[in-house]
Image (tube, rainbow, N blue to C red; front, top):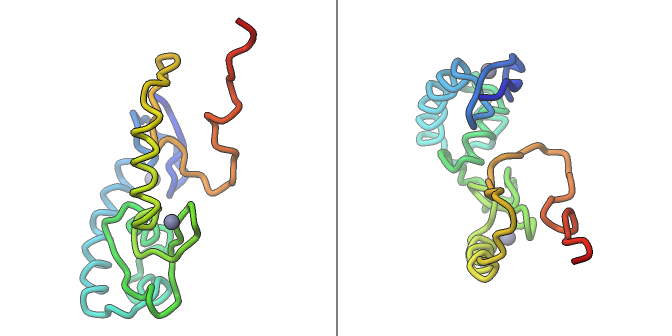
Length: 145
Ligand SMILES: [Zn+2]
Ligand SMILES: [Zn+2]
């Protein structure tokens, strides 16, 4: 168990692998239903409209989109809210576009077998917006030997 700061309310809480405290999670579940219903009726709404008209925090709407629980269809109209993290193409949900997703999974298949150390590669351990260099490259190259 670690104690980290909740991504939304900034309160410290004990967690195993969530970045969101239990009370925010509960709130997000409620918000999710509100937002989902709103989007269902207002398919062209963009994130500002959604947030304004539902009273749901924009950060939470975005969070739901990233998780793929929500989908906003306004992508085609050019007001994309999310962009593929690899090719920057507008996407409607998740973090990668269709083609990059396929790409990533085939790359992962290729690089299986490099299991150095007992460190599992947890894809969701850091979702900070700061553009840190992705570790794994150059970090701990084998010295000498
Ligand atoms: Zn919280
Ligand atoms: Zn892409």
